[in-house]
Image (cartoon, rainbow, N blue to C red; front, side, top):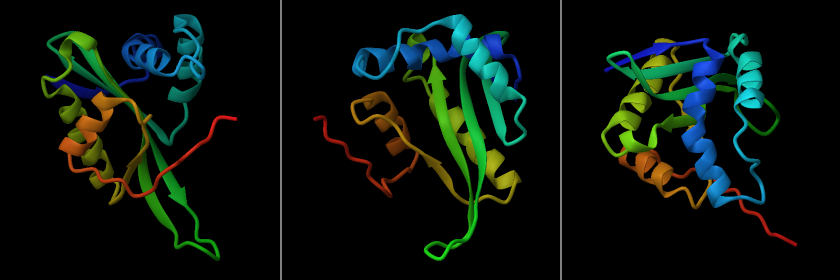
Length: 153
């Protein structure tokens, strides 16, 4: 198993499909059906940004998952102190490879990238009905620090 950085938008778009399909299944009122070309175009625009990092997890030469992370520098305001964080936008592992430790390996790689940059905070969010994500993050020591609530009118 190997994790490396990539700028291959097509590969990222393919590896994004499992998590995107899950979001469509859980929240069809918010998520559009998976469209490879549109998603590839989006990722192509993101891979060129220097504060974004895309990791791909491979077993041999078979891609199994990816993570999209962003380095964020939060400036000081009159309310908050300045801090830096590594924000996890997406993490996805092929459905047939889930629950085998690959998500944990991606999270460990993400933590390694944070430490290399002297960043001591990793932030992320996930949809409340996404039990796979909830389980992965809880298993890896992540705790709820802020809640986002909504009300449908």
